[in-house]
Image (cartoon, rainbow, N blue to C red; front, side):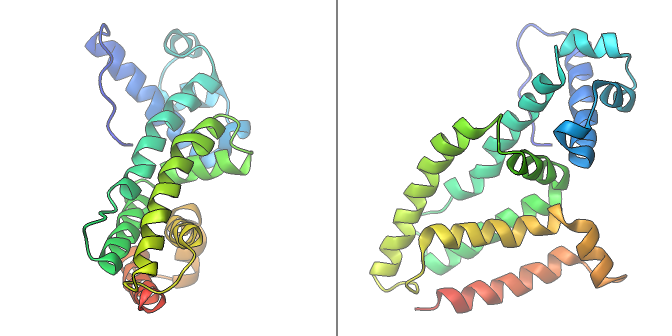
Length: 206
């Protein structure tokens, strides 16, 4: 899970217990989704009693919101790093690689986010309509300017970003299916990186 800053005023034991609960909840939520998860499951996974868990978090939703709030910042950071002064094709490919690395390194977080979206995003809709939309619109305008200058192909900027999300997060969200189909001896992320590099280079070539 992306690093969290220690909250002021909490003891080392309190910080450790909160982190233990959040790690356990991430496992449970990413496996069962929000609706299928219970506080009893989270407490058991954390090795704590339910009353002890409730000392730190008043509800299942409070734990879920804490996880999502940390995740969202990390999830959109790769798009922030799209550099208007860089070489357009390489900047977009670097963004794709950063998203693929996030899926590889944080598969539980990816599934947590996917489950929230599938439920209608009740806990993060304000972020989706606010900071995420603002950032995507800003970077879409940058990509459109590159296309208008003839530096990349004339692609739909928003749908290019959506396709990068879909083609990278798939490897985390459908990890079991991907590995079952590929079989033994394959590294899905290494193979995906090479394939997606070729795919997007051809798509973006002016």
